[in-house]
Image (cartoon, rainbow, N blue to C red):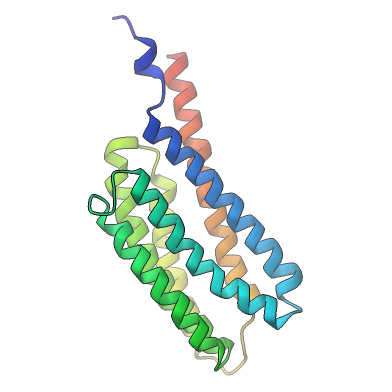
Length: 191
């Protein structure tokens, strides 16, 4: 059986997904770096970073859904856009009260966004494969959300560092997914 060159080239959608995963990983690494360096010592920077994180997730999900067939075709991401925008507003409100409330908001968001990411990854698995890291990321996010809510109810105030660890693990999952897609493409070309 002869394999045509176009059969082994990744589709436009696969290339987009790989680039998207790399970009999400890079953003998260930058966010974690800023959170652990400047955000730990400057409350204003921490507040901005805590607000930007869910806002960025809303924008990223919107762009990905739009590039992947539109919002109507990608309902889990459409819902994730709304959830992340609502979270951004809730973080701004919670910042007026304290970090315990902010961590509680992040916990609820991590659960919802994680379950939506899990559903998106399962749907994409049929078309692109290589989604196991995104499935794990979504499940881990939902579990982390539960821990955040429990920590938010502790008497000691959490810091941006609590959320930075979560964002760092998310960056790792996005990076693994991007590398996995590239590796799968290389294997297809060499087969």
